[in-house]
Length: 211
Length: 211
Image (cartoon, rainbow over all chains, first blue to last red; front, side, top):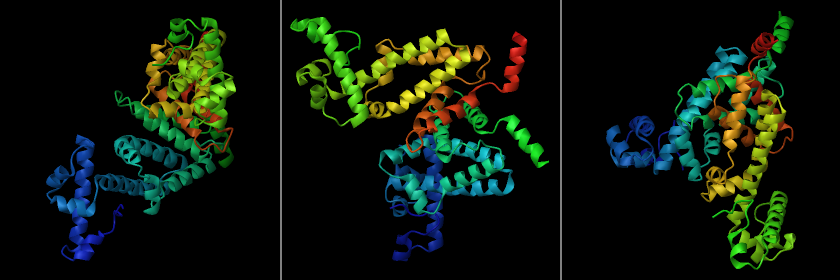
């Protein structure tokens, strides 16, 4: 039901009227405009208005995204694709403790920023995790890997598991409901990370072992 | 719509057929049986079966609890009443840090144990927090007070607020969804409390100041 972000729509190839590259460009443009408009003006903005602001016809929008739910899902799948890339970059460029804590913080902020979209989809019975998995984006796997590496490096408590981290992540995202305090998300992330990391004494022990 | 746990039902005094003490006893009995049965056999057990196991007629149950939702709500309000008592006992009997951390742990376990009931009520549009407040049970106030006292005593980070604690509480309760690991709740509570407390160095500083 939901088109994969990186492939042209079946319509484009079937009708032959729109060159594949144009279709892709239109799809990306609608997606970018919709992401921006929903974030700024809320999820009730009608699809007609998205089409107008993207400079395309409503037919173009509905060819790529037959329902508004498809548009919501495509926005989140695109964000999930981006997040898996960020996880890979952190895994390559940072020490394991920093990679894990940075990715945790990124996920909390992404979760808070996209909560409305995610709740709208969940309310409609759409399983985003399943759709992401089918599209080949393994965000849970990335988080598991970063956790395991941070634990192996002695940066994170060895006794916590992925379900703990996921639950704490959900708690941090939920903090955002009372939107009054802009520093609140970073503070609660810091609290959780202080809880997750091995104690300074244990870290010092490991560091001197490695020296 | 929901009767207060400690008052006799209007029906009992209006009809005059049932002495007030008997009505109270029946109500308490139905509530105790319902709490047990729903916890053991799930929320789908019909009210008729509750009545049978409590040894009363279905009319008695429906006089006290006109709908199943009223019964659910009464169970949770009774638990909330109990929890406020536990908060008071901890505030009196324990040092502020222990009182706060113990109450946090109690709330997580209570939240996990009663999640099904709470979700059933929330799904039916019933506002439990509001009902508890109207019944005079100020659980948020107790948690706020215990947090403030723990912060004043230097046991908990001074920068966290009630919304942080509430979000972390929700996260811990959510951990219970993957029920496989019985030690998981206590572990995630420990993680959160390690995050919330002031660092050992800060605590040592305060302790030597007080000595």
